[in-house]
Every structure is written in structure tokens, then in C-alpha cells.
Image (cartoon, rainbow, N blue to C red; front, side, top):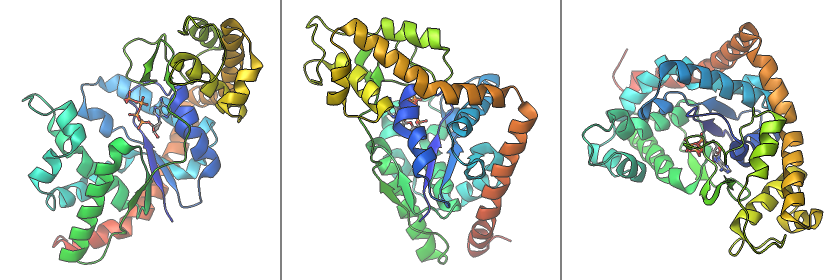
Length: 321
Ligand code: AQP
């Protein structure tokens, strides 16, 4: 079994990414699993090149500091040659209508002449990410299911038309806690691309910044510390975070505090401790760019080596070479 998971460097890594994904990647990953920083996907929306470059390095450093085995991590654009080649082959096996039907494209770009063509075709690049590595399982949220379905369709179509090369991947729903919500607005999930940073705790935030963000977190006027997500969504979010940090249920976490102020202090300290090794490790890596580059090159080399025979076979069967 080979699993592939990615993070898009569209912003700074936040607590939601850490608790919902990265922490599990570090502990549950098998020897054949791969993790990547999907910087090519970040180009589908307006972006600044220098910021993208810096965020890619930062995302990589955070993944490594979080304990993911270095040899299993790569940056997507370091395989731009391999991915670009397979992407073209797959684009030529994909109908325009199939790409245009993707819900994310409809939501983010449809109807606008200025929407980037990459926004339309990025599910095909995602199929290339998946198929190039012989991936059998892709852990995704429901919003990405349709993209994995497209990867399955393209793999089957290619295998049936030109010859068997690709494993048929399947989407798996990761075993995960509820999404971490924005501290200023529990109706929204904590997101890298949030315009306001007050409700988003970043992995590299200093302890004082984390304390300030939790102190300003919204609660409600009920004044009772209990886990009731429907009636008290903001308090429930704090309890879920506290529970996740201590590997206990949010109900058990509610025992730790009797006032909102105590709860905020408890969750801030738990998050600071949870993120400490990540923050310190990532800062060290970012302070030693040469070492980070070496690690990055090794990861890319391994992923490219693993992909090469499959890519060669696909190109040959497609009538190239
Ligand atoms: N708030 C969250 N709670 C729990 N898990 C989360 N993830 C993201 N936000 C939360 C998980 O982090 C992994 C990598 O995320 P991604 O790069 O695919 O980005 P995303 O899911 O689109 O969400 P972001 O990080 O907030 O970015 P933007 O603002 O660009 O949408 C995934 O496994 C994701 O489930």
C-alpha cells in the first residue's frame, strides 16, 4: 500500500494542519508513503513568487520538524519535469467536460474569463501526482473526492487504451478529529488563506502570540465550560483543541477548567507545548538553508527515482520515445 498526502503552501502552516494532518502523518506513515509540498497547486490562484518560495521552504521545515521521515518528503516542483510530462499525457486523455465539471473549479473559477487555466486543469496535475508514484490510497477530505475519482478514471482509461502502467488509486477518508475552527469565528475552519490572522494559530507563532490569540478567542454568554458543539461552537472548538493536544476526548478536556478564562489559559499552554518541538525544530532548519536544501534534494531524488520507470513506461506506451 502506498499513500500520498500533500500540503499546499498557500500560507503559513497552522494548528489545524498540525492536529488534523501533519501530526498523524508523522506517526502513522508506512515506509512506502510519501508526503509533498504542493507548490505547483498554489499557483492556481494569484500569488507572489518570493512568498511562494519562502512558504514552500517553511512548510517543508515544519513537516520535517514535526517528525515526518525526511526521505518520504519532497517538494512538488522539484519533480516538475516528471510531473509536467505525465500531466500532458493525462491532459490528452481527459475530456474538457470532465475537467470543467469539477466542483472546485465551478466554485472558484467558473464564469470568470480571468480564472487561471491551471485552476481548470489542476485536478489532472493532481492525477499526475497520484499516478506517478504508484499511489494506491489518497487520504482526502470530501471536497477532494471528485479529484481522486478523476485520477481513477484517467488511470483506467490509460491502462485500457495504451497498456497497464498505473495502479488504480482510491480515496480514503482519514480518521480525523473535527476540523479546527477559526478562533474568531467558529463558523469558519482555521485556514492558511484567512485574511485576518487573529483567529489562526500558526505553527511558528511565538508562545506570547499564541497566548494572545487564545485570550482573544470568542466564546459565548452562557459562561459554562461543557462540550456542546451545537449550542456552544466556540467553546467546543477550544475543548476539541485541548482534547486533541492531550489525546483525550473534548468531554474529558472540559473537566480541566471551570471558567472561560481558565479554559483559554489551559488550551493556550497545551498548544504551546504541542507546537514547541515543531516551532523550535523548524526554526533550526530554516536557519541552516544549506542543510534544508540537502534534505530537500534527497527527498526529491528518491521520489524521482521511484517515479522514473513508471513515467518511462507511460511515455513509451503513449507513442513517445
Ligand atoms: N482547520 C483544519 N482542521 C483540521 N485539518 C485541517 N487541514 C486543513 N485545515 C484544517 C488539513 O491539513 C492538510 C493540508 O491542508 P491543505 O494544504 O490541503 O489545505 P486546505 O485543506 O485547503 O486548508 P488550509 O490549510 O486551511 O488552506 P487554505 O486556506 O488554502 O484552504 C489537509 O489534510 C487538510 O485536511
